[in-house]
Image (cartoon, rainbow, N blue to C red; front, side, top):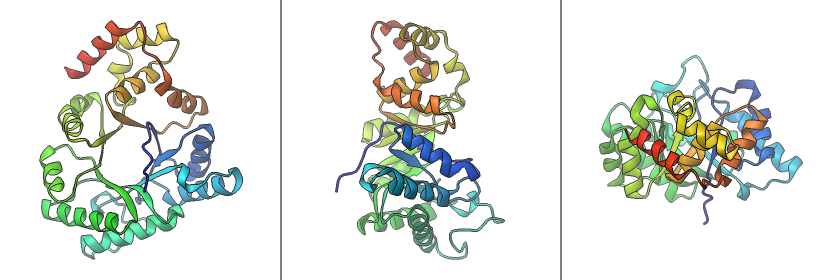
Length: 275
């Protein structure tokens, strides 16, 4: 069973009623991977599914051509005033079964390319129970890859890895956490895909760095494209949630940028990120 490995992912948080329109727009511009969550507080997973159904019926897109990633969100990340995808009184295992079933129904698919814990749970025991549930879903063939988001302690990854290899980590990669150096390095050393969010909005000093601006000017691209290209070279898969079609096109094009004649500036930027 082959699993697609995207170089950039379209993020669907905070789009509300515009979710269907924006997901369709992103895919028509060329995106083939998206990230969502079964968390009505911040995501409209059901409208993501509506977009995917329209893309299949009206534009001939087949399920095997695109990558869907969604998440189980623990109760601490849910809004109790919105419909919950599970009974919070149930065991963690049963919550994940119910949340996964809701996601499959919302997204109108029989399988997920990637399924993540939205964060560690309140205790390590609960996190391990949740991980066992993801392993069971993977063994059943319902999900192809499993991982965790918002994890900033490599000891958690070590504990999970004793049960089953963590395949995906999705974290804030921004100047506020020194670009998550420890977890990123752990992922790099252990063959774990590292996905970044807040890549641009969380790093104004990086976007405005003279070396980034110089590279952008010399190559006739945007500073945002330079950042996306640099993180991709570091083995990071960035998320972008832009609602602007031009920016969608530019974000997709970042992977094709040839960083020629700017080696000194690239070293300067890398040193800035390393600190």
